[in-house]
Length: 287
Image (cartoon, rainbow, N blue to C red):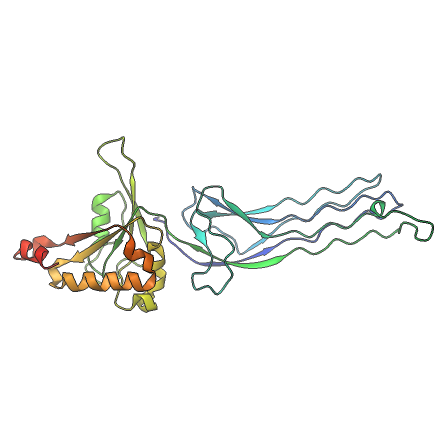
C-alpha cells in the first residue's frame, strides 16, 4: 500500500514514582517513573500502527541498606519522519520530527518517593518510619500529523493527469481515472535517473486542488499541508480543457494564500494532454 497521511489522537500516561522503603532509617528512595518518548524512524511510512494509549512502567521500590529503586523504562512511540502537531494550531507544538532518530519526551514520569534514609535524623526529629510517596507522572494527549517529505510535488486541479504522470515516472501505482478526485490521499514515487551516480528523486502526487483550497474547500488544508516540505513545485496543467493559463493562475494563488513561502520555491510547468489538442504550440504559447 502507498503511504498515507492520517491524524491520530494519542494519550500518553507516565506512571507514579515508586514509594521509598518502609523500614528503619536506611530505606532507599523509589525509582522515578518511566517517560513516554516519541521517536521518528525512517522505515515507517504512516501512523496506522500507532496505538491509542502508551503507558510507561513505574519505578521500582527502594530497599534497605540505602538501595535506591531502579527508574522505570521509557515507553517509546515510534512515528514516521515528518510527524508534527495539529496544523490548525489547536494544540501547542511539541516537536517537528524531521530526522531519523530524532525524539522528544512527551510525558515525564513521576519522581520517586524519598526513602527515610535520605532524611537526616536529629534529637528533635527522628527519621520517620513512613517513606515518602512518589509523585504522579504527566498525562498528555497528543495529536500527531504526518507531512510527506518529497523532492518534487505534483500540483494540479482534479483530473489534470498527476497520477498518470507519477505512474509513468516512477514505480508507484496510484489509482487513475477520468473523473475528479480519483486521488484522495497523497501518493509517493521514486524516480531513478539513468545515471546510477545521480541521487533518486522522490515525487509526491498531491490530490487535486480546487479554487478556495486555502480556505479548506474540498479538503484543501488536508492536501496543501503535504506541499510545505517539497523542494520543487511542478504545476500539472490539463491543456485539453482549454483553460491551462487560468488553471495555473488558480493554483499559484491558492498556494500563495495558504503559505506565502510556497510561491518562492523553484517551480516548473508541465503541460499535459498536449496530444489531444489541435495546436500544441499555440497552447503552450498561451500559458
